Image (cartoon, rainbow, N blue to C red; front, side):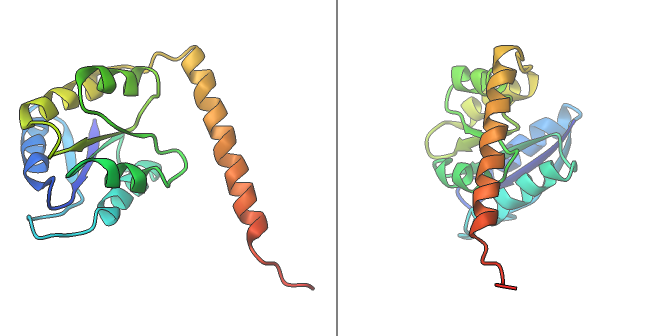
Length: 160
């Protein structure tokens, strides 16, 4: 499985440890940055993972910042991205089994590294349950289409 991973400066140490673990387990990991602990914004890294998923470059994504909030907000701007902020095994399991989450988001200042590594394992090994949850995802896809249509209508068209 090919995984895109990104972080801001606050999540850098977690990202490095997760990359090492996943690579040792045979996953193909693509690091989209950041490359050190120098302060940076979260959005460019969330954007890189989200676009990589939508382009088919990755099968799943992992994003880490201080709280996970900034990465969640940024990644979920993209239709088709289901980035879920997880902070315990239950939330990671439900993110995959009920929401078919394709991006795991974590906060390096809200959980420990061992907890994060456990969440990664759960996220990557839990299948989507389908059934009624697939119907719920279809509803979300309809919302995405509706929003896209609303935004398209707001674009000012020339009067001719």
